[in-house]
Length: 309
Image (cartoon, rainbow, N blue to C red; front, side, top):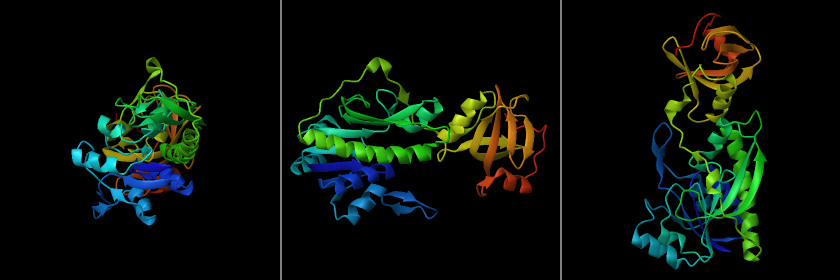
């Protein structure tokens, strides 16, 4: 097919690479404007832009798609479909109606569960047993369009937002190629979403990374995995903020919420509202990520001390 591709981060780049490999004609690539990145805060191209330029594709980086001139430019490209993946800009009605087969979105959840900005993290936080990819015919609602295909993926007890993101990016690439193939042969039928079963995946904030020791240890362990690599779970100890990169719920009882029960090479065991949490990888502000064994060598912690509320 002749396509427009709209996307910005690595998740989207995986799909673009698969579409190129499958032989689709990418007439135009839309991606977010270059953003400051790195220590020098120099303008950096998105992963999608980098990949597009490597393949000699035409790239357009509008700040909005509401502009009539941009819409006219898109209409002249004369494509059969637009594939959208984590683009970051709203598509107005005028843009949705441009391609012959409309606009197809690669969404990282099994819709209608987890509509919105952070479906991967919210699925881990909720303790979902599985997630997946939905290829959706876009409409003007928030992830409310007709579902064209779904592919499920189990969430393991070791999955972080980062590892699950990578698995879903690969699955999304497979799903969009398969869906377009079926569409080209007229072998595709959509299914409307059950709006009564919808849940909302709100955007993550840095503030929610702070662990609340009054919660269940199982819930806190999920939070550590969901917030890795952003915003990263945090705890406060004697006025300092530590990042927690790895932790697990432990079947060892006792202790008040936030109380340190044990601190050795195997981890720092902390009391919670219910159960205990074993911290195994920590980072101080300005420091490196360290195993607890290495961390404790320079940061003594003793049983009976408490993390700040």
